[in-house]
Length: 142
Image (cartoon, rainbow, N blue to C red; front, side, top):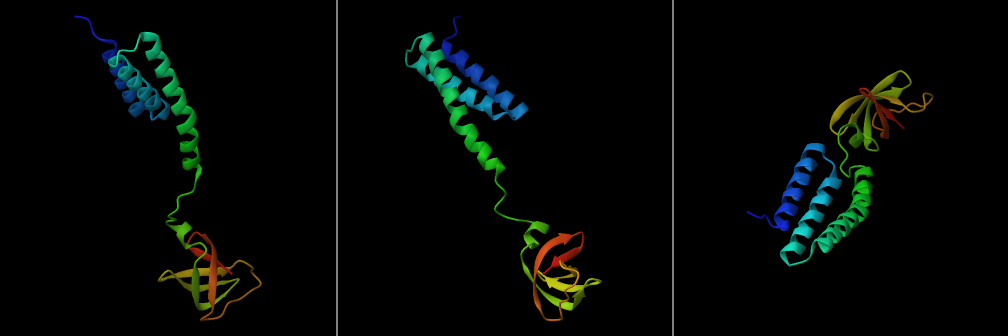
């Protein structure tokens, strides 16, 4: 029983796909796509040298094109800020006078302890302030 080359290419692609799942290395997935392309070439009647060339060209092209795009996307900050990051930059209303010793603000519907960014400043009740940072459970305002 003689197994066609395209079957071996698909077995190789499956092995690379399993390696991708186990190691989470996207390059293995790109090599698997190259192996599938080589299997297609064999199915269309291409010789062994052409199959290897197609495998190499498709794999290298995917790695050269897709990898930089994926790296650029993974380096970007998420567009949806959550938790403390979502509170930074929002406006709040002073509920109790805020000075260097503290105070209270209403931020995103919740009451927060607050202190001014500049310890020499004070904010009176009803004044709108901007949240610059969150330090533990205390909002830093200006």
